[in-house]
Length: 178
Image 1 (cartoon, rainbow, N blue to C red):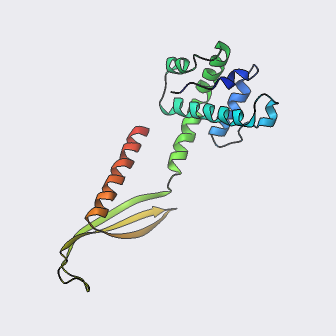
Image 2: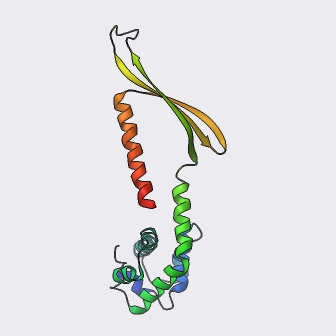
Image 3: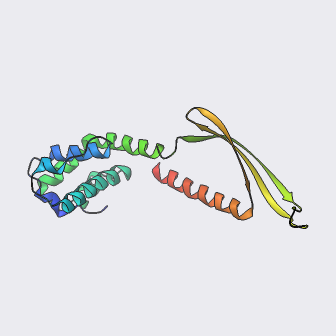
């Protein structure tokens, strides 16, 4: 995990309220606003601070980091700030995890219900007398918003390989999230 910005040291104690507002932002609610925290940071510093804290919370929860790993990544901060971040992370970790799961699920509302496939050999076309190209006819039943919609694809060898590579990459991502 990346270490947090030193700008966090400028947060007056107690900083728990600020951290909980950052977690609210991670969870899809209202994040903290610059005007609520005075003139401590420039706009650039504020954006970097929010981004680094939000990323820190998402990564710590997503990777299921232990308390020791979290403390290790916060070594540059004061003891009081480390304790505040760890306390907030422990208290809101499950809420952050749920928000991450919902964000992942929101990537697509479609689900594959069923599929059928056939290999066809195209021997010729109206432009080429001898073609001899293998084609995959793929029929998918996709459920989207509770309605099953049929999707039909016809893929040549290169397109099929691209589809297989994409599905393998998606499977790797799913396995990493588990």
